[in-house]
Image 1 (cartoon, rainbow, N blue to C red):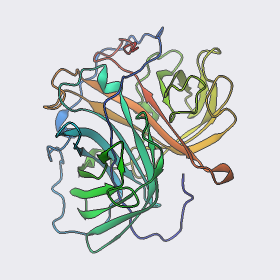
Image 2: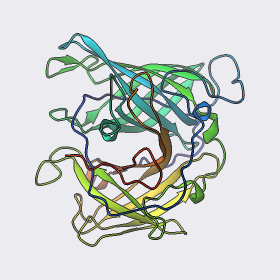
Image 3: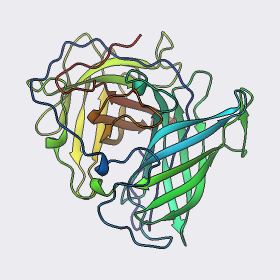
Length: 340
């Protein structure tokens, strides 16, 4: 993660791209015995519906951008002559750091396909007069044959309401595999993420071990088998320290620290034995996100408080990125799907 910079004015948010690919998952032996938790869709509106803010946002452009934003990202696939619509989450911290994660919600995505991650980007945002510009930004892709590379974004926003813009590579509209990868995004401010984060909000696949079953996503070429996916069971202790459940899986250590003003966690994770990027330490954030059926994914069942951790490493002037995503089924107590 880019180092904190004092006195940065305002910061923002954003989005990226994806193409459908096969989802993943590690085998599961974890069980949870607590009763189901029901999410309130009004607190977490479906991507792009513009609802769910308990307090009416102020009118007019400009103002603070910090916060958690959710909505749609659209890529017009010129090869197949139809648009792809992706679920996206953008997070802007008070220090100016910016993150965006995107996964698949388009067409008739199933619960299994909801575990498919498109990628993420990190950077910093400056704002002026209701407009924002993203700099120092790189996209990490989990799409085969789409390389990691710098990306830029710009657009307009209204504080604590909406954010609209375009993502583009340099040069603008640089095609890849015959595609124009410029993308439009429309995300809404999520007021329910305001306030301090708490470890009590975490949803474990196994309460006794405090373990979270999921998949570590890394870009193509990092693993010897060229896969994007490494199955993991991460343990989050009561003090926020990180560990691993099974010795035969990727071993991790690190720390989660609840943020004071947003319901996200600052994250530090070191990868050890059986891991890609073994020996490297990554810094970033983690957050929880409810997921449920939408018009783009009518067959998907509800997932409550799914855990994401996105982080980068800049050692030796080489930027690396990883994304850990929890696998959940629609009912609390069930294990996540095993996906080939």
